[in-house]
Length: 319
Image (cartoon, rainbow, N blue to C red; front, side, top):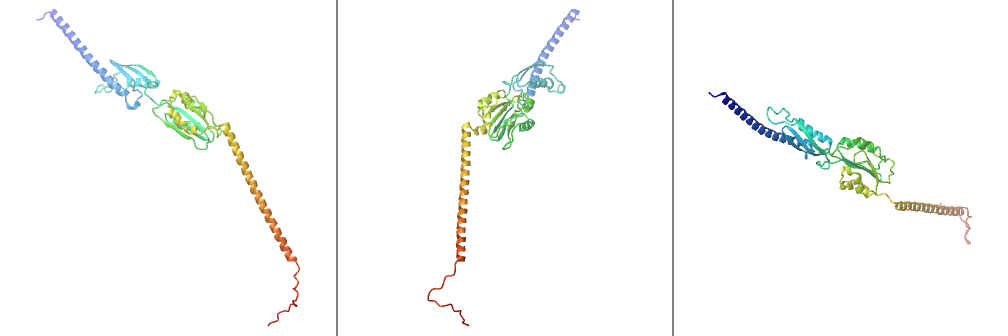
């Protein structure tokens, strides 16, 4: 029979062995759990419903605690990423399918639109030229576009042609920095003469800038710097305006001189036609008077006497 000392020794060895087995099992389970959590979190961030906004977000697990890093474009996206990992992660299995395995999230995501996945940014260009009106740009929703078109129409002169709407809708676009101020702060262009061209632009941050037609595309790009509008988009938006320009003072004088010359020529032609008509009427009156006088003279003249050698006229009495 083993002595109490031997029993104690065996018990201690058994406990140590159990602890070692538990530790090895825990390490194996922990490593497996971290891998599963990482895979599940990655799938959640890459879900197509997120439109790729988390494409550069990294997730790591230490135990059941997640750490997030990388750039996103807005604070709302940073909060959304954290909420996804904190509440939407599930591990496969009948027991774990309804249990949230994430115990904490350390959110170190940065707000950095410059390095976040590309997304269009909203912008607007309104152009008036020769009675024509056009608006180009990018907005996030059809509702915003309709609201803006109504607001713009109230700030423009009566158009020669209907407002040419060239605003495109990009659902993945970043939200306007200040939509309310943008659509209520449209500059009043209603007094713009029909023969004058002007341009108004906004990066949808509540600020508008107006320019004459002589402004360069680079100057427009500078005014829309925060929206990072490609220069080719600006060139396209202003192509119609560029093909129509405001006349210079010299051209205006030439136009006025041509109009005056045309008016004088028209007046001269009218006067000449009137004179010709009057002359024709005078000639006709003279001719008529001459004819009337001749007719009157012929009617009042005495009968011509009979020629010599002829006898009296004897009536014809032949039965």
